[in-house]
Amino acid sequence: MKNKTIIKLFVIVSALFANLFIAKATFAVDAVMKITPVATSVYIDAGKTQNYQFTIENLGEEEFEFKLYTGPYSVTNEDYDADISSETSYNQITRWITFQDDSGSFVKEPKFKLAAGEKRTIVYRVSVPDDIPEGGQYCVIYAESVGSDKEKGTNTSVGIGSQSRVSLIILGHGDGNTNNAAEITDFSLTGFFSTSDIEGVAKVKNSGNTDFAAVYSFSVDSIFGSNLYEDSDNFIVLPETERKYKVGWSETPLFGIFKVKFSVKAMDASETKSRVILIMPAFMIIILLLLLTSIIVWSIMLLRKRKERSSRLVV
Image: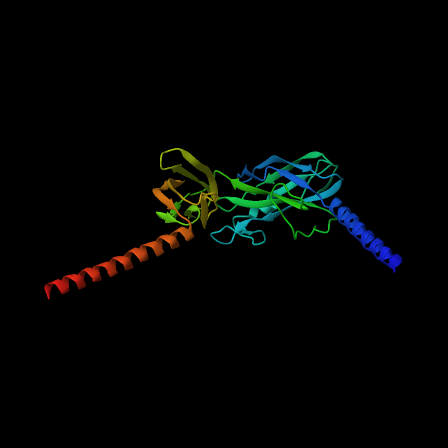
């Protein structure tokens, strides 16, 4: 009986070690890539050709092979969910990009090998035809490992990640017939009272044919004036789209009174709101409501007793 128990334990331990070994081996073949930058602007001018660069780095411990290719880029809603399959007049640049291979030729889908820890500069060319649509052009350059189980792109990421595909967003701008039309269609800030986070929301509409950057700033000060949180940056709004952008302070204390300022500027349109906001947890609100209710009930009962006494004295 004792021998059988020992054999069972041996089998279980062996299986565990086998699973660990398999997991480690599986992870080893996954390409760990970094692409720099993750977004860039290129110049487009009808009939002109220009070269640009980006870098791919192998952050893993083994050599891997990867391929390069392009895909269209657009968005589907105000939350800016990416659409990397639909073709529009704004992503024709997908067809204009080629990559320099090891022989020096520019091709559509070259393949390269990258040793562990190696960084490689990739040269790509934007060859703009003579007849192009007006406005901006947008696409994605992909670097995807070859031979990985994830090669088909079921897992993607922008920037650093233990994925088999990373991407670079291309924003194409030119001197052609472009127009910019910005409108802030919605602008809000957390009300005077909140039970949780402080948040600002802006919707910016682009009715033009090229992208622009909307600039925002968000600050939270204590009631005495000291700065507690500050965030300022910009976000891109693509042509013929409306983008909803949220910014806020998520690490608010349970209780406090704060001075908040939120502003957004998109081309000639701008909005600003400043407000004093009281943060109070829900349980405290319930306690205060119960206390207020008790005071009201007690006051009503007291008034009734006084009326009864006064009526007796009159009789």
